[in-house]
Length: 192
Image (cartoon, rainbow, N blue to C red; front, side, top):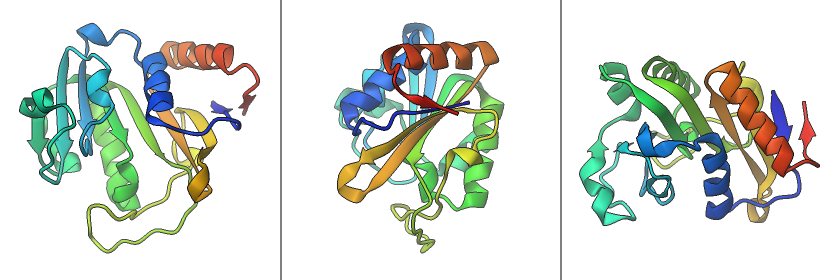
């Protein structure tokens, strides 16, 4: 299932708005933010329990959230994690992994959470697997996310001529609810 929202440019406010549609009941849920960077937006979503994971030591934008930060490789962290999260988020991070390691991340997210949310630039685009954690080592399209609901913004980064998309996995009922809410709000959006 896919929705294309062709007339909107991206921003932190748009990301936050879409995430609140995807995760409306955060006050009682646990969340892991994988590849958190500085967690500029996930800390604002109101999750009751939260963990921010990044391979680089980073000060979070909200200093009061730093106590929830874990410096670790996000794939290794999830593959050895023995607990469960309601929501696993990988925002602007899967493209920093090779395709193989990105698929390992998706498998680990599916194993340890009820709902998985990926946000990534819309491929194809040029990649560079130089081993640096900030390089884009892989390019993703909605076709890479079979059985996920994808919300595609082809004009997310107009200055870079680059789109982005959300890929959401969870129960079929939850994906249908999100789809219906997005269609209601962006009624003119295309669908596939």
